[in-house]
Image (cartoon, rainbow, N blue to C red; front, side, top):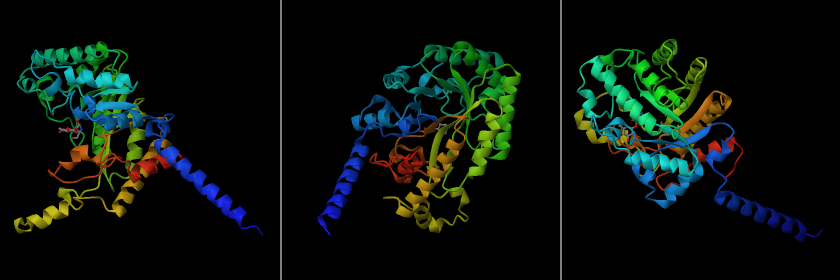
Length: 373
Ligand code: 9MR
């Protein structure tokens, strides 16, 4: 028997497969957005440096992987409408230009929110002034980007955890119909743009019930609402897949689109679960609360990857109801979760690590679509 033949065959197989993996790794078509192009948009929230494209490596990663973008901060009222008679569209214009350059689905975040609210809004004391302010704010901004923004978060986080309406300056001055007014103003300013209600913890049954009632009320009042945005600030354990599925079913039953708009998965302990507050244990407690200051252990990396995989499997199961999945940031270093609810921790909630390298979670999500890296 000629032993050179099997040896040659083996060597050829090895050579071909290693060439393939190199080719795949650098192949510009191997990306999240291409893998999921027939299912839903894959988006990311961009911070100001990413919008300004200060780092070319990061800029090309964003263009390669994502086909939708959301501004992490620059379109909130404190930045876009800082004074009653002054709008500042500079950074938002750059954001839109970036999305247009790459032909992306552009999401606006957010028109009405009690947080990061322009201070002049908080001075308003009566319904007539609030109505005029909402009119000027929403009409000016939505008209300014008419035809250039694909969807807007019209109202963000209007609900308490028990499903009742949150006490805000909008509710206090105008009453509960501020929601209807906001959606009607947005639709009038750009009849074609998709209009969303966006909130977190919608897996909580009481809050979800409140959100369903909120959407039904808008519909009953003749306002156009196209979608519900579930933020998706989750962790390794909660919410359960059943709870997530229930939200998809409940919202799509209302005839609106469902999008997951701010997805990230915290791997850190939650301070509200910690029992005991002995001040003498402060350093021990902070080590306990920031267990992976330098890097994420393999076992947790795998847990995170499996959690992302299970969630994306569920998203695929309901792809007919889901329009967009947006990650709340591009890489771990950027995440707001490094500073919330405790400042200065190292969290690892996204698909790219601090060096912008794809994590195991990325690979698992790609493998779901049978794309190997
Ligand atoms: O990621 C945003 C962070 O940079 C800001 O400091 C923070 C201020 O509240 O807002 C973060 O984004 C929030 C989003 O706009 C609405 N849903 C919750 C997000 C995380 O807090």
